[in-house]
Amino acid sequence: MNENNKTWSGRFNEPVSELVKRYTASVEFDQRLAQFDIQGSLAHANMLATQGIISHDDLTAIEQGLGQIREEIQNNEFVWSLDLEDVHLNIEKRLTSLVGDAGKRLHTGRSRNDQVATDIRLFLRTAIDEIIGLIQTMQGALLDLAQQHIHTIMPGFTHLQVAQPVSFAHHLMAYFEMLKRDIGRLRDCRMRTNQLPLGAAALAGTSYPIDREYVARLLGFDGVCENSLDAVSDRDFAIEFNACAALIMTHLSRLSEELILWMTPAFGFIQLADRFCTGSSIMPQKKNPDVPELVRGKTGRVNGHLIALLTLMKAQPLAYNKDNQEDKEPLFDTVDTVIDTLRIYTDMLSGIQVNAQNMRRSALHGHATATDLADYLVKKGIPFRDAHEIVAKTVQHAEHKQCELSELDLYDLQQFSAEVASDIFDFLTLEGSMLSRNHTGGTAPEQVQAAIQRARMWLANP
Ligand code: ARG
Image (tube, rainbow, N blue to C red):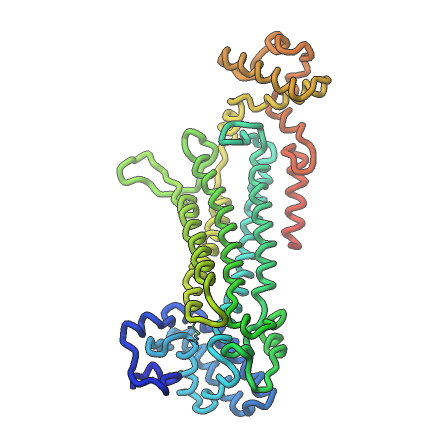
């Protein structure tokens, strides 16, 4: 009889092959859950003793043994065995070798099915809290950069064509809003993650007089999973989290795409600090924005993990199935990718050098204040659709003369509408255009300053 199966092999006549052992084992990746597994076991044992299901001496032995195991794992002294399949059996086996029968009593009223569900929830709750903190730090870096650029004018784009002038600060604050929604989604997901599965046992509950609410309180859960079948089989929280993560990465990927464009000589809006770039082995002039490119690329793998988790669950009958073991690697990789990306982004933002002159020059091309001319005519009583037509003709004329709309003289402008007077030049300048968008959510410096103020207040008390 092969060592691996001692905990469940009583009824088997032959050991599993090496390949099956490797194929079914999860210890290589789920050992990452060890500290949460121990935390859950300590709470479970405490409850068992409180309810008189095991003795207080057993509890003391279990606590002492798990304490030692925790240290062994922290010090990298713990010997993980593939024969013992997963993190749960590895720890239980070691506990029994350390404290004897008390260790064998730990699993009373519990199954690996509710145990693993608990471990993942504890893991994910911790990850969510860390990620929320990292998003807030990145938001702080965005605000610091935005604060310096309330008056820095760049072209705002639609269809990647110059549309209307906006401030660089206003553009950055759009990302603040996205990240703020990301935090909201993570908080919402945390509420559903932070429910206790333990007590569901294998699937139907247990015949011992357990106290699930007590365990929930010990572990800091907001409540208990209400249905035992759902408790062991539900992985919605993992999918929800991965969806939140996919959106975070999508936002960072969009910003990355912009940084990459802005860094090309054709734009020349920004420079990234050298530590986020690499050179080319053949083209000496190159400075490549590797970090934003990789953020864009890694978004693909996080999106992939979301699809993997959805697919994992889509045809599973109730309750626990071994399929669920496949939830861990995508989830872990998503957590690691998002955490690394947020960390690196905060640092990268603080190292951005802005070339305000190039931004301004670019905004001067493409008739960015054409809408302002139309709005000017509307304010003189011309219906908007007619004004739109007049401006279109004026732009055509400017194109013909190979100049910008704002460079036409009064005589030229008046050819298309007699309503145009000399005050038009207050509106056709980039500053005039930006100043005039003076309402909540607009790009006027006063409004962006107020938005930054509100953002700082929110960040101080999110
Ligand atoms: N390693 C398993 C997992 O990750 C633990 C639960 C196994 N339960 C079982 N009945 N085989 O899902």
